[in-house]
Amino acid sequence: MREDSGTLHKEIGYNIVMTTKEERGLRGTAREVRSAILEMVGVAGSGHIGGSLSSADIVTYLYFHGLKFNPQNIKDNNRDRLVLSAGHICPAFYGAFYKMGIIDKEEMLTMRQIDSNLQGHPDRSMMPIFETSSGSLGHGLSIAVGMALALRYKNNNSSKVVCLMSDGEQEEGSVWEAVMAGSHYKLDSLIAIIDRNGMQISGTTENVIGLAPIDEKYRAFGWRVLHVDGHDFQEIDRAFHNAISGDGPTVIIARTVMGKGVKQIENDYHWHGKAIDEKTAKQMIDELS
View (cartoon, rainbow, N blue to C red):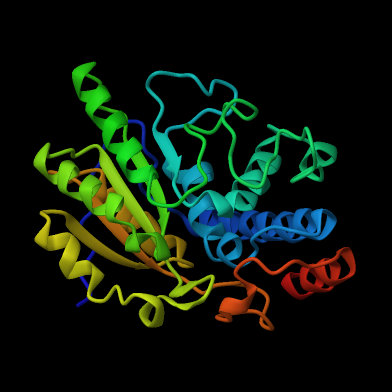
């Protein structure tokens, strides 16, 4: 069942009306983020391109339009928090950081090298722009629940906590403990986004451990559920602003294409974490262009 994302909620501090010009700009930025992902992984000779490419539009929307976030003041107490639970897709974040000017090209291309700040999974001690380090799947939503509770105790009623998860990690039991807690505490500042590309390292999610109907499961736990095309910025925008007006936690299930933008690898789970070299990366980047 597909839910209507509803009417937009006008809240000070959020840009809620996406113009055609803004959408066009986000598409251009997302294309550059994807190029950066491929270039980084090509130089490193390792890394996860499948989920990084599928989530690139979501990451681009959040950092460049949706979140209250200032890259020049990453410790602002009034910022929105973005928790990356699926740590293996951090190349998408590194690409966004490069576009924001937080890292330069030289540093970006050190990803996965010894002593680099850009490790294969986020390390907050090296990159404090991350709200938390992450590696093993299934931990991020619990951390996000804790952050949302902390904001409540501090009487911060304006900041949101967004947790980006993969669909494969919905197989982790810890996710559902956090889902139960988020509903119990009625955390209306909490927004979960699931990159629903239907693939994980060893096959499709439905063949490994079936998730469907994942929307009904979240509803049964008391969450509001919104469905979007995870590559449509207008849909993402409408759902995000519906979520920030909600009563209790909201999950946005974003249907995406694994490997989005590179036809030869789209929807092929073998490319979840398959390495590429610099020559292959350049060919893929040319296809994006």
